[in-house]
Image (cartoon, rainbow, N blue to C red; front, side, top):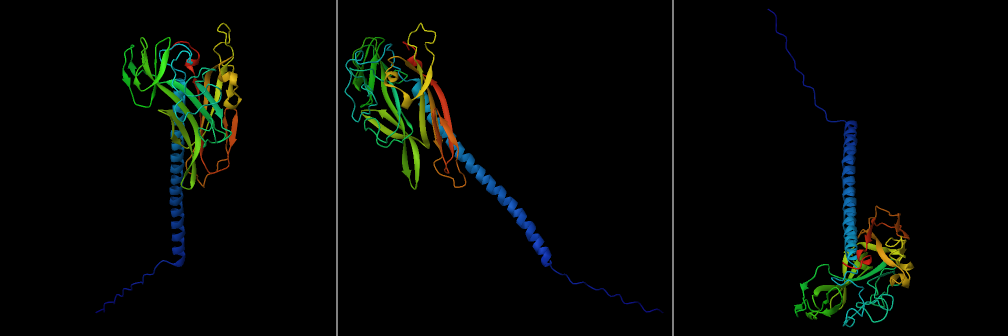
Length: 337
């Protein structure tokens, strides 16, 4: 009888990862982590850039829209069909407190007895003190724009009957097709078949404001109430420039009548051009340079921007976008609205 063989089962010992395997795994993990990190950083950078340019787009287009809309209605005087001057607007109120008068002998808020009343005027800032010292914080190199008009919709129908308008401190124009009167809030002067319009005097310029450790350019707007008051309108507007489209053919029978002969910058406009003595300003090219509010240390701006006949270049960490538009001044080419 055979004896059964003994079956012996041996259990091998279990060992851990070797040092080489650990280093290989770490290397692969680092590569994967670096890839994920680079994607995250790239997405964050893209988000920052997109947000910055989105803000520039919004600010620049808003500024361009405001300036364009105001210029479109420049020199609009309601029902009155003539040229607004002192003789046709009797009586004319005294200048409001804190008046900002532009260049020329008749370039205040209301028409004077001498000289051509300028309803549109501008200049390039060469000194922070502008408009007879009215403001002392203007950004050198940018432009000033001043215009006068009435609101595009009448407030009330006068029909020659005494009525009361407000708010107190504002100014109004009551007019028919032949004449009118500028007055402050209260009883409306008696003008046959007259309608009442809110009188506007707007001034635009750029100044720089300190916001914490940063200096931010701001588009300012001056508005007429009982006096000219200024307030910040849009942050991040670094420069505004205007080119004025001039028609030097003043004879309606001339073939070139009503056509712009040249676009002239504010600093090259002469007194005669502003006075419409031998020309008319038929259109305006607007240039708005928007700048990011905060710098980006990872971005360097070395671009050159062309604002009309002015070229500006930078070497800093601010993003910028240039906006432009051409506005036709319809009220300069017609005699009746």
